Picture 1 (cartoon, one colour):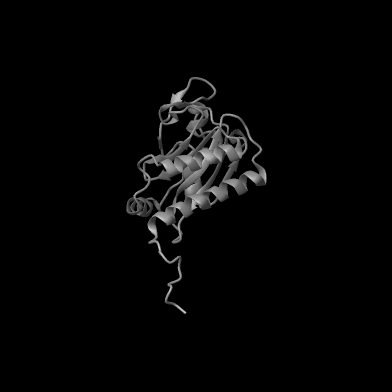
Picture 2 (cartoon, helix red, strand yellow):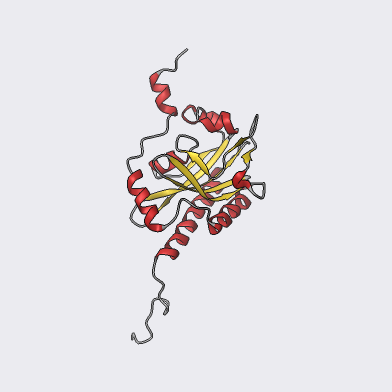
Length: 200
């Protein structure tokens, strides 16, 4: 039986007209295509704050997602599989753009809270549900001062979660923290802390 066209449209990854500009911005910032120890540490902090086993600092281009920050139970999780329901699948630091929920967060520019992805027809059909066993997701966009959405911070689990308002506050707070780190790298440092000693 074929899936009705309107139902199919609910499950596909949304159009992303901002992708070319985002890719150029990421290139200028020098982030989004290599592992980043600072982002790995922030992802690890996010797993500790939420209790979720997996966390990512994720940057997205036209075709793929790249986890510049990644935390998972195994020490070399960048090359390990997320242990899901069924046979494990290697995911590494890259993922196709049509997998997972971060592309939805980027396009809408708002946090997304899914305590059980199977409760939402739009998200239950995503490939990560069957292939990796993902059951819950919590993510927030990384938005720069010019309003460009660069990517996301997120946590996922193979179990359901009642993230609630505390989870939403945590994920938004971590998104702000990541953007602070990015700004610190790109803005010139004032050795006088913003106040020149000769200024009255």
